[in-house]
Length: 59
Image (cartoon, rainbow, N blue to C red; front, side):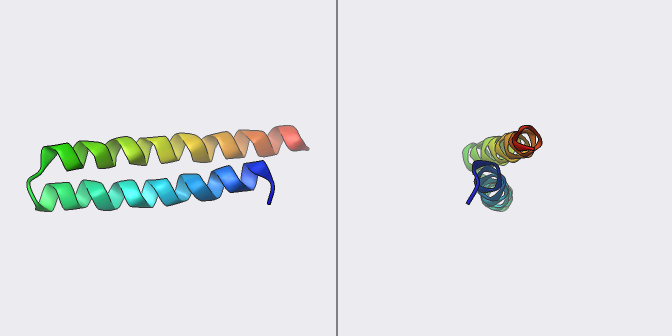
């Protein structure tokens, strides 16, 4: 698997995982868990974007 594709897949995974943590934090009224979810979601978006940029430069 190419590096760009791997980054996009891992980024998507972290986005989903972050959204789940964020929602769980809201439901459980746990701001710490909610913040961790938000941060992981953002990190996933960044990693996904890096994969998209790498794909452009591979061409």
